[in-house]
Every structure is written in C-alpha cells, then in structure tokens.
Image (tube, rainbow, N blue to C red; front, side):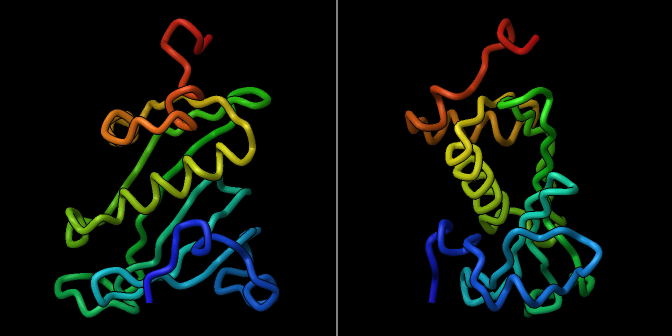
Length: 146
C-alpha cells in the first residue's frame, strides 16, 4: 500500500518509542513502499537530514545492505533553511527516491513557514518542474540570500 508523503513522515506513538538509530533524535520514522520495494524513512532534526534506508528491505541487486538516500539542509538563520544536498546511491537513481525526499523536505519547510535557499541543483529542478505556490513563494532569490 502506497501512503501519501505526509503520512509517510508522520510519527505514530509506536514509532516514537521504537528507534533503529538510538543515537539520533528522530521526529518520525515509517516504512514506505514504491514499485514493490519497501524503505524505512526518517527525519533526523539533529543532523538536519531526511533519509531513506535502502538495500536491507529491498530486492534490488548490486546494493549494499544499509545504503541510505539523504537530503541535507541547514538553518542559516531563524526561519531560513538552505537545502544543499540530495544523494541517492547509484543503484537507486531514476526510481523516484530523490523525488520522495524533495517533496517530504519541502512540505516540512512549508509546515514550518520557512523561507528556502535551494543550493542543491536537484531541488532547484524539482521546484521548477513542480511550481506549486507553497514552494515557489518561499524560495529566496540570490539577492535575498544574504
């Protein structure tokens, strides 16, 4: 069953109590299915990263168990986040993993009413290809970044 991205990163009481990564401060974790493959996703606020654990739950060949796709960001000042890196292991590229991370991260920023600096070329392209007002009106131009 494919869940919406909003449901995907919503924390349930069960997931708040269970943590695969006890050293990380997780705000949410859940499983996600895409194309018959299952992934564990989480948002690590301490590390400023949205992650999808790949490989362990997947049937994909040539993937090391525990590969992780990640979207990193940093708070440059109050209310302004720089989304600067999206990384997906080669074996998973072209399967929509970066798109899941991008939409999830952007929706998170919208919920927090944050302005966005898109230093990552993939995220620039994603917003250009998906010009939703809730995204485009939050993106700061190069002149506004300082």
